[in-house]
Length: 108
Image 1 (cartoon, rainbow, N blue to C red):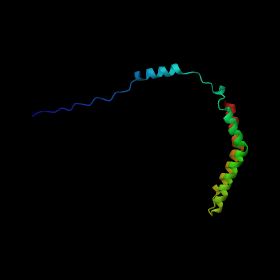
Image 2: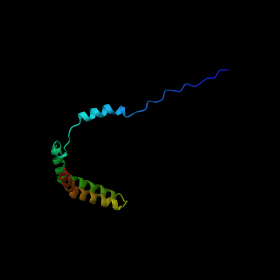
Image 3: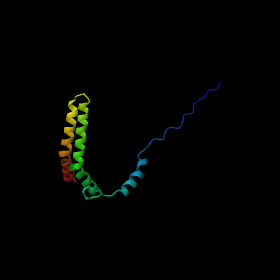
Image 4: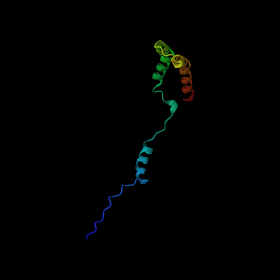
């Protein structure tokens, strides 16, 4: 009678601290200082988008939202949300954009 012994499969390699040393050193060597307020890469895009929302774009968004609410009311199912959503969009576009813009400008 022969006894068969199972040969265990090689254990999965455990990740140890030394496995992170080289990538950490490479990342540290390639790191540079980041200054949040000094970059002006996206200033033209931010200015254009803000002007759009505060001007005709905000009015268009508000009118489209109001039209959607009126169409919903005309469909026969009255809901307070159909009136409240366009009002909220109008308030958000009218006052929200300048508030957010001033907060972002103040933080940066």
